[in-house]
Length: 196
Length: 75
Image (tube, rainbow over the protein chains, first blue to last red):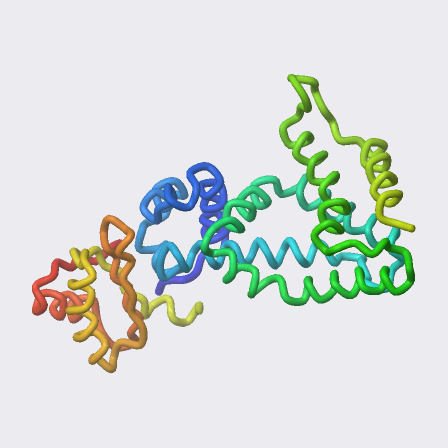
């Protein structure tokens, strides 16, 4: 009797994420994945019907983990500043803990898998974030800006700092470490920019 | 999913082209004992994956051979 080996399955997922980041979707193959994760090709095809199925499942799972981390201890009724701070904390924690998953998500987000992944994992998260922004507008805690401008100003600085942190350096080869002070400093500037 | 693991059969084949796929589709779609099947033509082995509670590896191999395709179980 063949049984599903959860550890093996997790190892396959982990390897698949690593390989998608390293080789991209085009360079990723089931044979190569089987070899690198030490399972037979047949085993892979028992878990997943094909490469597309595997990539979709992995993308959706990352999305679900990501979005459930984002709404942790967060409520759309929070004050704008408190809510946005929580978003910064949640996003930073996830990105620092799961750099590979984030890189994989990035790669898949720019591919034809985007719609499938997002449809499955994003709907509830989107609703929560929309109502957060709408509440903030209504309470006049947020300047009337378009959603794209809002997102860029609200999260752009955070993702830029996380990139420096990820690379361990900033301009030239100046070593960089993302401290709480630096994050607070950037966060306060963001609040200044977005609030009346 | 757990309970269907034993019903999944995986083969390396030479079902390479769209036309090959068309030919074998006609046969496989007509077999009511096959619940689900697909071919990963992106893979070098053109892996054929069959979900069936009843059919054996040998029976699938025979079906493929009758249609002039190679078919080797993957383990």
